[in-house]
Image 1: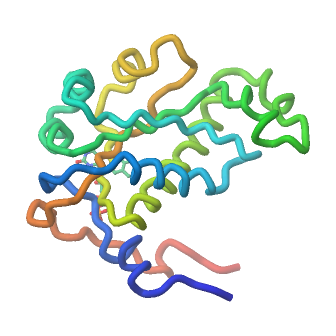
Image 2 (image 1 turned 120 degrees about the horizontal axis):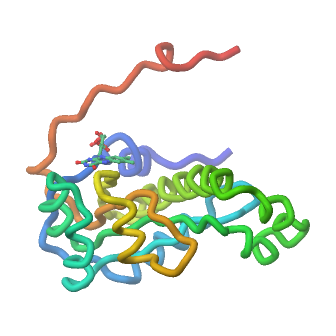
Length: 196
Ligand SMILES: Cc1cc2nc3c(=O)[nH]c(=O)nc-3n(C[C@H](O)[C@H](O)[C@H](O)COP(=O)(O)O)c2cc1C
């Protein structure tokens, strides 16, 4: 049974941090593409792949995003080389004939009420957003996920006229470790888990 080495575990989990400050170092588009190509391999219900990402990179796109950010998130977001808006297509079922071709999975979802579709899209795009962060970290990038923004405004600014809604946003770049808080505590296995 194969497993990754200690360096990979450090990079992905043990030394990976949520970054608040960024080095003045650009991120190649090729790396963002590689991160997506890894993240898309992660499991989703019926392979529904609801995640849609807008990579906000230009100054103009960042200025567009700025008014939707909570005050405390503005500085770190505007200084990040890239902001990934992790969106979710509530009508993900339209792609199921392509993504789940061995069954009529579209029929399982297409008549569900919107709130039920939104729960499914939120669950699966959140998983995919997590896969994306791990993929980015595996490629040597740092991440700074945030939910402190106005979702409705981001939807209007970036997803108008579509069935895509924003889930969370994630700064991406090369972190400035001098701007980190000290690591917050984590629970022990026995506190939060049990084996039955
Ligand atoms: C979904 C999500 C939303 C978050 N929202 C914010 C936010 O709006 N602003 C912020 O400064 N940090 C935000 N964080 C960062 C968390 O506080 C941080 O990931 C957590 O404290 C763990 O930090 P660590 O990865 O450095 O250990 C968010 C993290 C996640 C995963």
